[in-house]
Length: 163
Image (cartoon, rainbow, N blue to C red):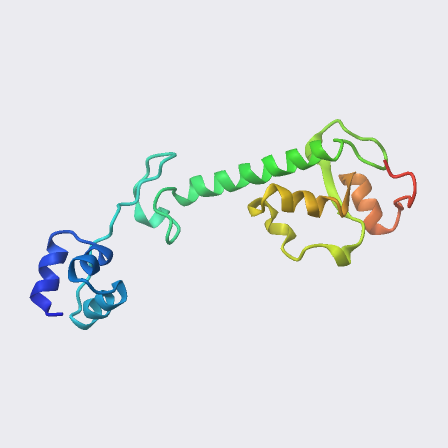
């Protein structure tokens, strides 16, 4: 593809996909010619956060143009809190050793057999609800104090009689 033709299509504001369609060739071929002629297309969409309206490109993660990093992080924290809240509710909402239920955020999942723990457990906020439930079936709900005591060997989980 010759440089002037490619440059005129870029000047029209066409994307690599649109140039490829107009030229009846592949997008990969267009990218090749852009590099060969040292040309660049303009970004298809400007950065604009749908939550706060921010538009500074330095405040966005690569590849995400619709939510700034601050709002993305806030959404991620909220998604984690919502998932844990649903799990606590699903699992009875109280410590299975001491029946503590005053502050739900103090309730944690404890894997009964750490060998069955999914290696991606820390990224569970991105999982489907069914996958979260499957992982929760391998766990019991403990308050922070009981959880620490179990890990320190100061308390044991009864084999029978776990509520």
